[in-house]
Image (cartoon, rainbow, N blue to C red; front, side, top):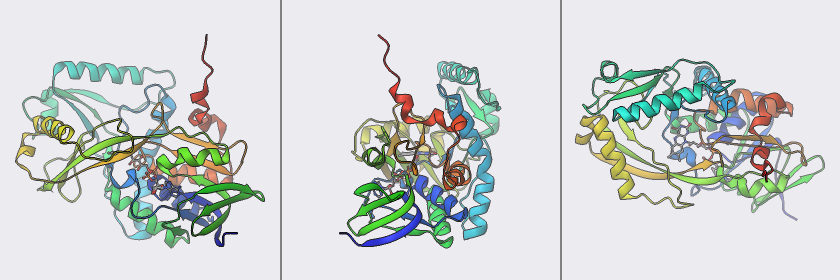
Amino acid sequence: MSRLAHEADVAVVGGGLVGAAIAWGLARSGARVVVLDEGDVAFRASRGNFALVWVQSKGLGMPEYAAWTKRSSDLWGEFARGLQEQTGLDVAFRRPGGFHLCLSEREVENRAAMLARLHNQPAMVKYDYEILDAARVRAMLPQVGPEVAGASYCPLDGHVNSLRLLRALHAGMQQLGATYLADHVVEKIEPRDGGFRLVTRHGEVRAGKVVLAAGNGNARLGPMVGLDVPVRPQRGQIIVTEKVAPFLDYPVVTIRQTDEGSVMIGDSVEEAGWDTTVGAGVVSAMAQRAVRMFPLLGKLNVVRTWAALRVMTPDGFPIYQQSLSSPGAFVATCHSGVTLAANHALVLAPLIAQGALPPDEFDVFSPRRFHVPATA
Ligand SMILES: Cc1cc2nc3c(=O)[nH]c(=O)nc-3n(C[C@H](O)[C@H](O)[C@H](O)COP(=O)(O)OP(=O)(O)OC[C@H]3O[C@@H](n4cnc5c(N)ncnc54)[C@H](O)[C@@H]3O)c2cc1C
């Protein structure tokens, strides 16, 4: 029999941005929380992302996701302040609005048509966005190159320092009494005595509730508690330049200047399984397009490139659900864990602490949507 390593009200599996935000929120709600994570070497989208808190273009095909995203963007200021007051860490959240730049009139037309389709959906949440011509883009972003033909702009878009966010969430949850168990890969989860038994090679953890927040690991863990979590890895590559004086006041969906001065360029979307190899072809295509948008980038030295794996569902929308067969077991997974961190901490975690996700708001995010019977 394996030895008891820990007992808690809630065990959160996964210490990435989703698990850490939920664990922080649970600990703030007064729950005794334990977070089980893998070791230093693991697939972690939370350490390789682009750090946008992004609203524009989210939710075509699921307007409820657009509303959920806007809600998180609106909560982000309060969330960042709460983390800073508690931990002293400024996660550098800024919401100046963000741009999607277009390099031809055709791209501007396609962008405008896509956003019109998004906003014309029944039940779409209302918020402002604009299609800007080249002159208006140049007035707001003086460094854009002559090929920029226009852009979409949304005042709700922003960005953060996402590595500092992960650090702040970990510091914050532990200050609130949560236990973080690194190198505790969960091998098995069993419903037991009205709660759950989680088996790791360093002993077992018992908890009243369990939250699966293991990113792409949720696909394997879900069925152990009656949850279907069809996620897959999707590769994205990022380029980071040397630090330069501030020149970019707004994040662009593929280019942003960090609070520390470096410029990040990204991100590609590739179906490459679990392969995190950086591909020179993809990186150079990203760099070329970025230089066409901001010619001054051509003079900067690249200091790093990396590839990381997104956590992608079949339709790209999040999954949140409590298990019907094993009540008390929840899953939370999404591909925009930076953007949605405020919701996960301030909305989802208190609901999990109370024990239920209101069906009128959360049924739409259930994986049951992937099992619509095929029509003949
Ligand atoms: C290139 C790229 C760019 C991105 N850009 C943005 C962006 O601009 N804005 C945005 O909002 N989002 C962005 N994302 C997405 C965002 O990074 C993810 O949504 C978020 O990090 C997912 O967090 P997670 O905690 O679900 O997953 P992960 O970070 O993958 O964490 C999962 C954790 O679970 C652990 N784990 C897995 N299995 C087990 C197990 N059996 N037992 C214990 N622990 C386990 C892993 O070790 C890991 O620590 C981007 C992602 C990528 C890859």
